[in-house]
Length: 465
Image 1 (cartoon, helix red, strand yellow):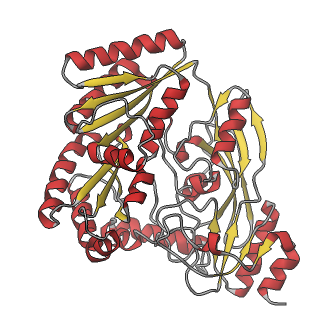
Image 2 (cartoon, rainbow, N blue to C red):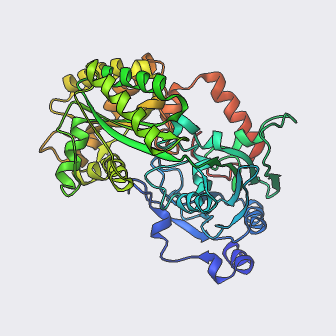
């Protein structure tokens, strides 16, 4: 019996796809397109383990896939037609919620928004939040150590995970699910698998941290004349709100101009300014306290010249509209045409200098190039994207200049003490950059771990390393 027949016998007709696979073979950005032998869709951890064992016996590599919303080509097959895509989409049960322990245990195929709603139904909060939350899955979020809009207060996916269930490259099941916040019994295997992008093991379930829901949330937009002022506003907001500051996003003028161009129906309450900040405060005392805190903060910022204008959301719907502006930037940029994306991390204090230096270098090298700068200023994560000059075909510009632009950007990131990947991962997009720029000792340790845990190299080969 060949591998496809064996997989069909194991998973049944609903659990194995061999035709119409385009949705599994193409990444979200339509940048990478592969060809799979088949798509396996197990419905349990035991079935995942059995699939892995079958593939290991025949030396066939596996590409784990969640919602396939990644941005670095990490979850689609290569063009060989021999790889199995392992979709976790059928594994979407919330196994347990322990309200007293503030934990939720869910399978890897659970869509992030469904987890948020399951927690909310119990009066609790699961704070991981990102633009793709309606389609991305918690397994993929953990495999890439996803960030999102509330890292400033709650941390990345890594900080929100207490335990994992993982299928190893040999098809064994590691039962590491637990709700413990303290456990010093040996090496932290959980952190080893989180962020490994499916190259060390396959996450099948996780135990996640929950939080009490805040009694109130307030959202505001503020206009700044410079990025330096936005950083100073961040310091002021931290001093005034402390841990109540849950969101601090920044958007440059051109990013919002693209939203205005492609989504004119979306209201923009502030006039165009060089930089617009989106702030969100969470409060445990109530709406009146939250509103007073926000008004005092913005009044001080206006008086000190840190901001030139501000608008505070007066309802939950208006708050969502403010966030929708921010989340529409990638969609507007996509409408504008192919672009060169950079998901970088820098010390917050270094971001104004980095942007000024890198903008100037790119403008000298590529006349008319346009910058779509936005992201999570509160945690130092900037999406520094480069759009072709007006009237230049985007695909031609990208094909001709992407490598040179990446070199300028990543060299500047290195000089400013940053990272070439903040929350999107390495995948295949940044694999060669990682090899060239990562500390050699770190790379050697990573390769040793990969060899130890996946000696046949069958788990998502060609990704990360």
